[in-house]
Image (cartoon, rainbow, N blue to C red; front, side, top):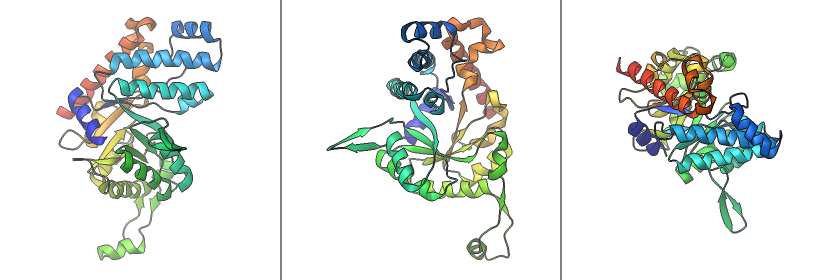
Length: 322
């Protein structure tokens, strides 16, 4: 699947993933009015409004981006109807030829992680048959419970030829409370370098090294199926992690609404112009609510999203060419 993602990036010239993270405040009133008229002001009504919203956006962007990233919490808040829309969205995006990254941020003890991995990336056994659950192409995984929370995902990925993006350095302001904590080198590490005591290192670097090791065992043609999440809001840390994980694709959140710009992204890419894919969520899906794209109006919100994608593509391209 990493090979397919890279092919799509090359075809579109856009190392961009659109975060399909719907909230009702983003959905234009005419869609909500129609959905509520049919299903009432219910969870089913909210689900229908979100489904029509997602579909219109996808119809306007599928040919200019390689991938989408639906965030499952934005669907779970609407209960079972929301999860139905999540699945419909995944299937529709795949029908349109898009790579789907399930932003699920799972990570738990071994048996629970195995169930999450099967549900989102693999097949569950039902009697004599095997059935796909949500069936995304990639999933985001939280490694901070340890390797037994990650290895079940890697196992399924190998079986299904799918991939992961493992949280290493996230874009949120408080990520450093734990991820930046300095960790002392273990005695075995110090002995292996044949020196005295090694300097303390931030936890995210150690996690990045482990991601690189996992990735070595699950390679595509030039990049690993095991990628990493590193926020655009921390470009200097991204520069370090790019060196630590040279063969891991980096999913970069934090562009646009969280403050990241094209110029912040240069160090996330390798010299081949590959190695990273940049996420924007509300900056694209709610573009019509921004002053820059207000002329499109709520009735043409999908066209506003397409314009925002093209502007983002230009911003990143100019930064990489400079």
